[in-house]
Each structure stands twice: as C-alpha cells, then as structure tokens.
Length: 212
Image (cartoon, rainbow, N blue to C red; front, side, top):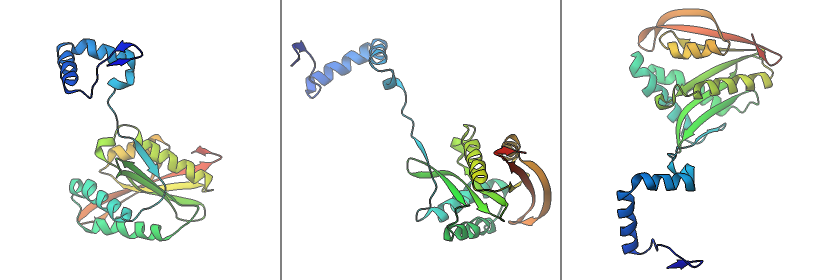
C-alpha cells in the first residue's frame, strides 16, 4: 500500500506482520535505534502512576487496618489486638469532618499502597497517625512526601505543634521523623498487642511556617 506516494507496510496484513517481525528479530539494535530516534519515550518502561487522595471510600477503613496488620504485626510479633488499635480511632476519624484534620491515601493501579493522617488532639496540637507505605515503595521518597505534606497542612490549619507515637523497633521510621525535625520526648515500655513493646513519642514545634 502507499501513503503520500510512499510504499509502506500494511500492518493489518498477516504477511506484512510476519515480514516485520522477522526484520526486527534479525536487526534488534537497528530497530531500537530507530525507535529511539523516532520517540525516545517508546523505549522507557511504563510506570504505574501514584495518586494521592484526601477522602475515604467504602472499604478504606477496613483495608487500611488490614495493611497495618499484614505489614507490621507479623514482623513485630503482635497479635490481633493491634487491629483494634488501628481500626477504632480510624473509624472515629471517618465519622468526623473537621477542616483541621486530613488523610492522605496513596494509590497505585487502584490499590491503596500508603497512607498518613493528621488528627486534632487539641486546639494547638495535632497528631500524625497511620503512616504506612508498602515495602515496594519504600526508599523512594514517598514516606517523606507524606510526612512533609502532613506538616504543611498542620501549619496551615493553625496548629503550633505535631506529635506522633511509634515503636523502637522501627528505626527507619524514626530516622525519617528526625530528619524532618521531630525530636524524641518520651519513651514507654509496657505489655501491648501480645508483646512487651517500647513506644516512643516524637514532637515538633511549628512556628511561622518553620519547624523547631
């Protein structure tokens, strides 16, 4: 067939498809060069996009609880009571609609792969809760992005401080918190979730858009 007077392959024709496949198999480097010169993006792997939303959908409370349970509990040796520790306050958050509270839900290919939330503890203090990131997305800056967005929201919402609780057996998370300005202020060891757990409290003062 011809296009603008030039003979071209009809890729809907079975014989043409066979000829094209044979040419590519015999000249892979030349074909790759042709594609690169035609459109470099054609040689780049397509990466699923990450999206973040700030609202809950049906099933989110249960699925976020499930993610916490399967990603944390087995590694830490915690029992089923950890589920209720996540689920009960998360359900309470879902029932409230405060302009001083927000959730960040990360999705990849339609599935939740991360989250974080700011909840109101008092008029001046916010709490960072439910920070979670799927292992496949760690060490890529997504956890820092969630924390930094949560801190920016807290400033805009008028809070003067933010705090969080974590456990001593999550050193990577502690490193992230310290790197953005949180300071350890309290440590408590007690029986919790079927084990002896050491919880650590981190706090940050917020003033004039700065962290202290």
